[in-house]
Length: 113
Image (cartoon, rainbow, N blue to C red; front, top):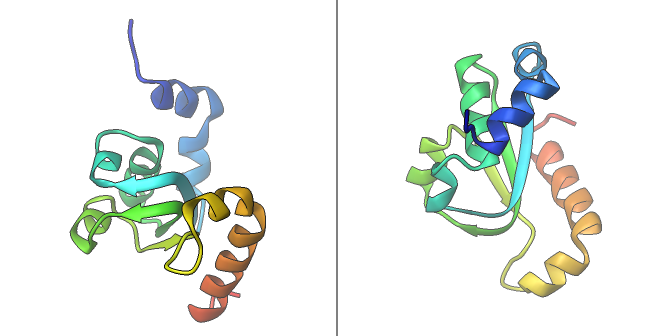
């Protein structure tokens, strides 16, 4: 039987049960765009969180999706590491630091921290 890689990992890891018990799902990817809707990890995990009525947010290196795509992905928010002042290359090189900063900023801004 042929199944997608994310389906195999989700089944083997038992992540479905873990998400069902979660208060928040945090996921991410290199680029969030229209193709993310086509069964990529962010889409699958956010969809699963949506089934359990768990809010989901994503962090990414590049954001190339409009609000409609974000809603279709069942994401409450997307935070991007690159910006007008931070190139994609710089975001890749400094991903750990930028992710730490962006996540901290997000959780402070939303009152979750």
